[in-house]
Length: 292
Length: 199
Ligand code: SF4
Image (cartoon, rainbow over all chains, first blue to last red):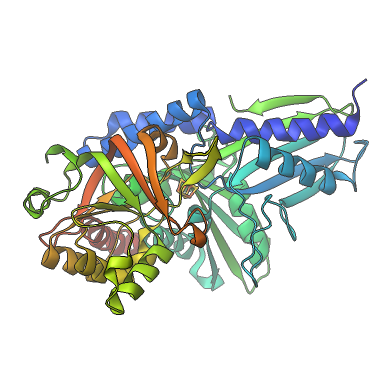
């Protein structure tokens, strides 16, 4: 039997490699649709370049984007999974290996000295969100998060009297402020409620729901659809140079909140939405779910 | 809207033909320059030592890009050649165009009023390279001709790169005072006011 730790490590490296040269199928399909419905020549040229880039990256194994992202993991860890507290150091090792093998651009910089660690690890990096769940499996979502699209994240601590109207306005304001910066078309994650930190985390988590999968709550599904249409009607288009598609999808997650607060977190994912998902069984065997 | 295939260096006459919304593909030499190249070159210009800038930039295309490079068998190879955010260069770009007579600035995310005015006055245009499409950009690289100022680090150094059919790039700021980014954004702001009022 292969060593459990080795299997997990090499599984994580594989996940990172898969994400480096591809975007998930739903994102690819949404970009293709955006290209087909577009009639603005500049927007069409932008979308064509993006689609070609995805193809070229897959074939040549040249990085999709020169910013190969901040390694970020969302993990659901089964309580009976045979490995727990060692997980962080295993993932760190996997990130080091992936950074030199794939290779990835080292993106972990000390905020005080600006010294680059050189291997994508450092204090709290890779970023790991861990949740304990029943069972013996481990589900991992890996995200290579681009800096440009992380910079257009927003947190609004709204007055609760503003309610849904306030939430919708905040989303529109965030898009105006983002403009061309997050390399649109983007996926917009909206996290409502919880606390300041929770709203932002939920916003990022929300973007992982497949684009063709509507919100399970019909009321929220309607709001997502409305926001998507309104955002695109702004005419910002791909790369903020005009056109029909600025956002590929709007995804909402929520939590209960304090009566006196209404936190709204917004996260944006660039078109180079490099993520992979996999499940590890208790022997360390990995099943890759996303991509292809 | 027109489509052009241009070879660098470019004359002022050619650059004045470009209008926002045109699509341009480039052949020839392009030179990378981001934050530190701007700083150093302008410092030299201020001291009257422009001749210490190692490349003649007149008529050239300056690319806001910090490439991913690797030296293989004594030869530099480029693995990532996508654009970086141009906004960081806004405060100095108009001066850079005036001092060095570059005709094309290539980057992503656009530039603002000061650069737009500088481009109008000195005859230059801004080409938007589709953000993040690094693989396509890299495959347009023919070879690294030279590199200067490596002491700034590989992303910040001045790379002299020969490209073929580099693009598509879109003219987002032309030499007539038009800026596609600000046009699109100001329209979007008006639409947003109507949308927000109806929520
Ligand atoms: S925002 Fe995304 S696509 Fe754009 S440069 Fe950053 S990582 Fe690349």
